[in-house]
Amino acid sequence: MKFRRRQKNYFNRILVVRTDRIGDVVLTTPVLKALRENYPESHIAMMVNPQTKELLEDNPYLNEVIVYDKDKKDKGMLGFWRFILELKRKRFDLAIVLHTKNRLNLITYLADIKRRAGYKNNKFGFLLTDKLMDIRPLGLKHEVDYCLDILRKLGLKISDKIPYIAVKKEDMDSVGNILEAEGIGSSTALTTGRDIKIAAIHPGSSCISKRWPRERFVVLANRLVEDYGLKVILIASGEENEAIANEIAKQIRYPVLNLSGKLSLGQLSALLKRCVIFISNDSGPVHIASAVGTPVVSIFGRNQAGLSPARWAPVGRKDAYLHKEVGCSICLAHNCNIGFDCLKAITVEDVLKAVDDILKA
Image (cartoon, rainbow, N blue to C red; front, side):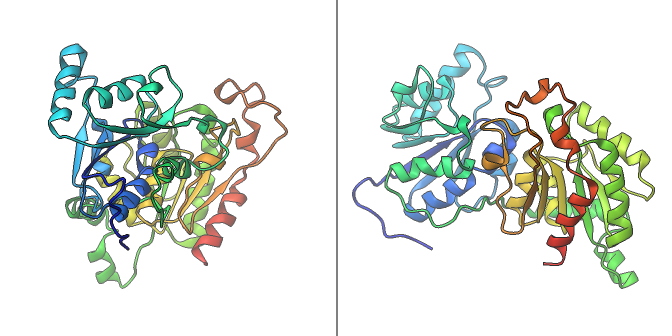
């Protein structure tokens, strides 16, 4: 869908800035679609960190992905100014700054980008020309809507709020080869006449306050095999999360494919696209799965303002999340002194009920 170009407030070269984590970047992709619909002929770029670049490659709404590597190539004052000069040469006339860091407001200002829209919550917020107060930590609505609020302030129309990731052919082929080698690929289906359906499980997360008990993931995996005939694949990244996945894999009664620490983000996107369901703690891969169209069951514990499902739940049309109140007046997150009762309150049967509802829909 394309909207008619507006002569007033028209921008030829637009930069979207989001240099934080995986989930944040994925949940920004509806902004890209909205910008493309409002400005079909404009050059649209997105500035990200090196770790999330893969998520935006081949995105149909983007002309360019710009990597800001503050820890290596763009490190220090020399790297900082070199990056600004390179950005200045690109002659952007609008910046949408969605990561509220002083450095990013300063970069877009020094790069001579005339209009700079974003959230004001730091001492360099005055460098923005179009700003909203940053109330995202209150978690009154979803992160997608908070991002789109900046476009609404600019008077743009919004048609869709669903995140989108383009899965590259080379990643689909690479994952296809991995599955073929494990006997769960397309050739196996042709030979046996049986299509093997995959459920991916992500038992890790960035914080202990987000991790459902690992023994329940073991029971869940066994039931997915026994009740639904699914092939279970485990994913995780980072030393601590990979150790959790490895421990779980050893305890499951049936053969599972443990791909923890073995996939790039592009390959992960391709794998999740091949799954019939993805079950995970609150984490970035939840939003990747949702963005490639795979139904998600996401498990939430803490209900701290700004960190709850109200802001971070998956937003796909078939997605579900599980969260239970356990009477905490204040959430202490990783400093919980009651043993994370919110996570323990979610049972295996709760998760299986959500799985059943999705698979039978």
